[in-house]
Length: 110
Image 1: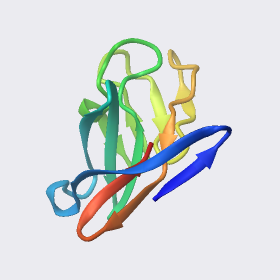
Image 2 (image 1 turned 90 degrees about the horizontal axis):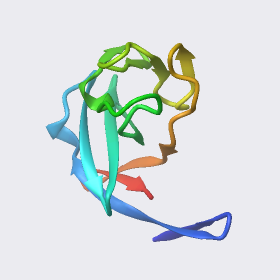
Image 3 (image 1 turned 120 degrees about the vertical axis):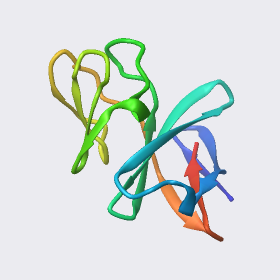
């Protein structure tokens, strides 16, 4: 299944088995050269760009508290569901991706 957004065709990508990611944890995948972080927040899955917008750090290795992730490098804080930066030094929003669980797998619309 594909979706059209602003002239760019998107498609669902099977990312990980849903039961492989514990609640309140994160992992990262690579898809076509892009690093994507997948978060399991209370049983609901979210996906964002996987690298901090301030400096090159993997957000999947950051500290998760509720719906936020703290960058492991300079402690910038992001709201996971929206990608909104919440504290310095981060000022740029993370790209976010729609997710779904299908046949026991987390799919991401990229």
